[in-house]
Image (cartoon, rainbow, N blue to C red; front, side):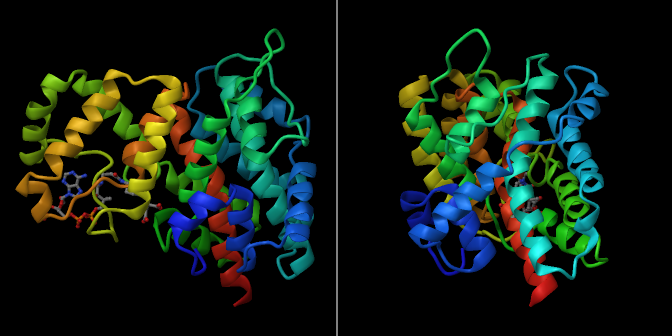
Length: 331
Ligand code: SDX
């Protein structure tokens, strides 16, 4: 990102530092980071009437469908967000979106499960606050495990931006008509929803659940070779070699499984990767695991439901979408 190796950022930075880097071109100095963190914390609340939007969704609704809808609706709360020519206003709405996308995501999750909403807590870090809004409950004290918080920071950093992919191009396309940033972000999130893009991590889990047992892996591989099915989480428009993000996510996965314990889906995923990395069908087509292959099994191990995976992708990618939108508007 902006000339910094992704490995270095994943190791040494927080997601908010990386979001600042993407949006401003440099990593924040200590005083700049303090202001940025305070700003993001101050924008985490959403208008209470957002609850009424959510009430319109049947419980069990797909959280990504809800997120796309509510992000678009947020444009109606800020009429001045249509004043695209004001850099000050666009900075304000950029900070609002980076912050509120996590709150809206948590609200969608809680509503889809019929759980009471948990308000943001500005005293917590971005990722800790997000996990708290997802998993805290009025009748238990939730303490996020620091290893899981760090894993989420790394996953958010890795998913924050990535060239001119489908959703980023959508953000630029909608933004080029001078639509407000909320409407542009809602459109980008809709593009990310698809299983060929951000919905791939959800498709990976569905594939692993369909395979069901390591002994069924060879027959699934045969179905892939006969072009009956895709090997979800493999291949990439750009990377025709091992995606550098995938190796970081794989390392993070092992750290998470130390805390959560392994399960059969992880064993199936490892066997799929082992076969794919040596089988000529995949090697000749330069098909390697992409960032979505492992992120899905980490989220599953962390207790997150499958429909939330594209939502978890959209949260950090909002910073990347806005950075690219800002570049288009001002460069
Ligand atoms: C992301 O742009 C980005 O950077 C996106 C992303 C980001 O951070 O924003 O990195 C995140 O979207 C990663 C991709 C997530 N999607 C999936 O994992 C879905 C499964 N992958 C495929 O749908 C596919 O690999 C794509 C869509 C990702 C890429 O498609 P391409 O560019 O058409 O693949 P290719 O040209 O490299 O394909 C070469 C061959 C073809 O077969 P032949 O016609 O040559 O015989 O490989 C085949 C393809 O049919 N192929 C696959 C395959 N992906 C490609 N065969 C089986 N399983 C797959 N997953």
